[in-house]
Length: 324
Image (cartoon, rainbow, N blue to C red):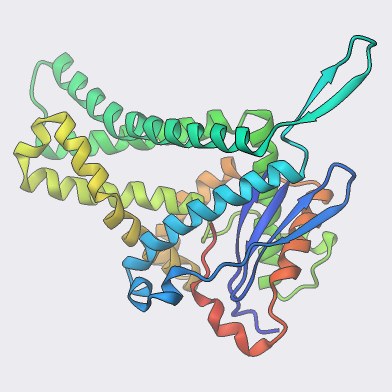
């Protein structure tokens, strides 16, 4: 099969979702040890509306669709894997598992999503600005515009890396990161034209240039350039921290679009420039991916095999499928 086919994926709770050129499939480890395969295929908006597939626009659309699709897959994987079951002890000492209702889990995830967005605004938009203001107050002298812009982005990057590192130490998140590693290693095995076996996958590296981790780092770096330019041109905007936070929120779609194109560039080409662009994301993947066990690799293999097109002439259609 032509290995020009591009496959992207997302680690879930005890499972992995893989997206191929024609099909999206989710593989989840069931409580009884079996593997459940669920077809998650949905026609992308960029195929229904061609204008949404144009460069820079497609990055924003793909990001939003990936968030929605990922949320649905995460909820479904939690349900299928038994993650939503809680163990209760009866009066006679027996233990019984009770499954949380779908409505309750949906409400819980919506609340978590809202709080997550609020936390992101505080941590990555407001807090860096407050920190820069604090540095200026402590130093007793106003920092040059370029120094304020640079300091804010460095602080934002430090907060992001620390946040990811702290989250990675949570037990459940660590398992998700292990599935993340299984996902990358299996994709590399496929791209290297090797048979998809546990032994072959185990030997592959777990750092992939099209990873969503790389995308987040690229967004921060691109955001630094956008923010610096806006800050230097519209100095009055920066003086009001709340207006500045609002401006940075409005810049997110533009930053997302540019970051996506850079990510695709790194996935398609291997040269000095793309290696430099991809380096920060690959480094951070040392935190967001962990070495998987064989059972996790089996899940990743099942997901990849389920999305491979039967018709080899479809290979070129996979070009725009990016790692999530």
